[in-house]
Picture 1 (cartoon, helix red, strand yellow):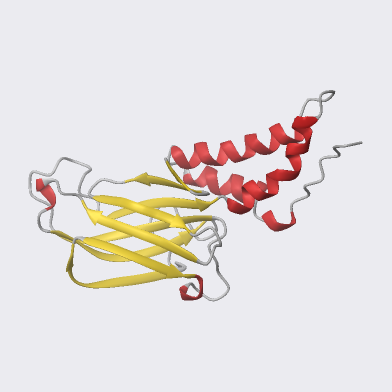
Picture 2 (tube, one colour):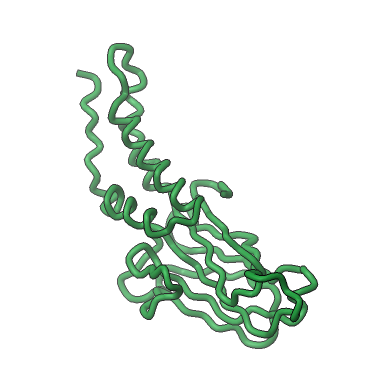
Length: 197
């Protein structure tokens, strides 16, 4: 797991390396920087296309039939850095929630490529935590109370850690379930912790 600003990114790659994968703090853009591994097996492998799904369109069988975004590269590229703007996504979609960025390759790995290292689709997951952390701020008041256990704050942070653990272990279905259950309406979550009474 890599922490950059308030975005958490989770990479599971074989022949594709996610050098950077994060949503800008204001939620207006997604930065994707990927490259083909320099391992000898991938000398004739190149980047082909990018697809983006989210927690609602994600399929555990691979890229969905209704991705939020699709981009195809021209030529034989080993490296790509791209800033994707919110208005480039499918109408009505944004960068809130969990994003699954698939990178598809073209070309052929060497015949002696180790088993499992020649998958043409590689996925990286990223999550802009700004709204999540911002929504946790009212709960911090509980920590200042010396007479009560900060139950609401503990509960909130356990929910955050549950999603991070699910993403970090590659259990995307569980991460999606927790996100939709706890944070799908992040801007309208009840943040009243009853502190200061």
